[in-house]
Image 1: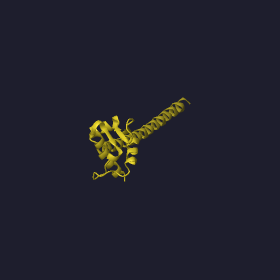
Image 2: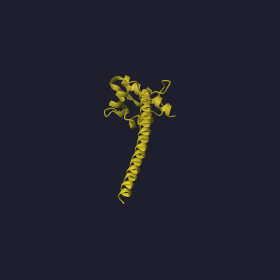
Image 3: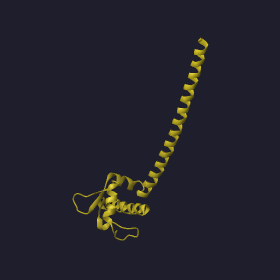
Image 4: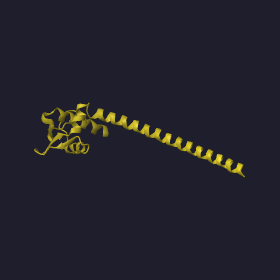
Length: 129
């Protein structure tokens, strides 16, 4: 289902980007085979939530690209953007895992150093008696 929505976003983002003044009427939204999209309003709402399009204030039922929508269209489209986003998120997860491992090892080293200091102080106290 998500893949189908992403495909519809890709298609209609391209249509908006290719259209005159980057404007598109709801009745001109298309499905995967180029037919009029049933549920175009729902897709428009999803695209608005993702800040790809916004309603045109001058014409009812018309939508225009946002700056983000233009940027994504100019750089390969929605599906390319999603692929890059997933790759980025995977890298962030790897970085977080490495950070956690480093913090754990740092904590272990701090405990070892604290233990060594206590042992040294114990020997100092014992030698003074």
